[in-house]
Image 1 (cartoon, rainbow, N blue to C red):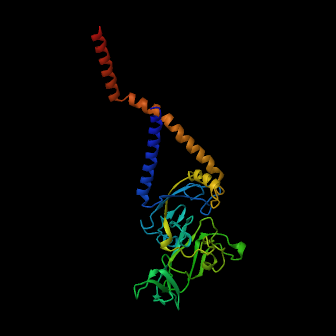
Image 2: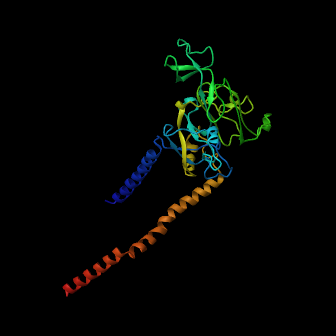
Length: 329
């Protein structure tokens, strides 16, 4: 019987955790409904910033089919004088994707633009190859309605690019400093990019215009971008590779998991990129959560004691005790 109170507390704690997970899944429509940010590629401030995505944050991830993804380019095009659609500190949505579709640690970066096929032609079905253009294995051909087609020209929503063999665009409002590598540019430029297939061009907010797709998208005026586990450069992010759309941020609490990963996994950076102020904020938050029940409980009890129902109950109990005393005499 002594074990029952402990077992009851364990059942209660487990039930609360399951309810929280169920609520997050119901809200996001995605599994898993949350990711832990491990790197500093999306940080806006070295000390961390609530509203931006910092290492150690938990991010709710909504299903990629839950709504249309708005790219950086589209958000600027749709902007009015009073409002620009923003997510985590900058225009456009932040997406979560697998590098070249591999089942490894996903990347959480901003969708800058979406390259969409305009003019296509049927490929050589025997070799799955193209005489002209690039072979897109994810796209259905408009002629024979089979999976796989050759893309010859591109459209980019949010820009004036239509039916173009290459994608070139200057994002003059996306500021960065590329003077060190000879580019002499102070903003993001996409130069003569020919994607391998339809997909998103992506970029970490803290990566100084070094897009994930590397120099192939910027005429080698930026760095090499990202590579998958096989060492291959990350291509345009196909919709097939999407894990979800970044939603609400739960700051700091992912740091607890990264402490564990750093000690058990060689593939995780652990707490390397977590801002030092995160630990202070996390400690204060946990302390506050522990102290709040101690403060609130007496206040709630005092409020209940003063309620009409409690006063009525006290009076009835007092009267009952007096009657019982009288009967015993």
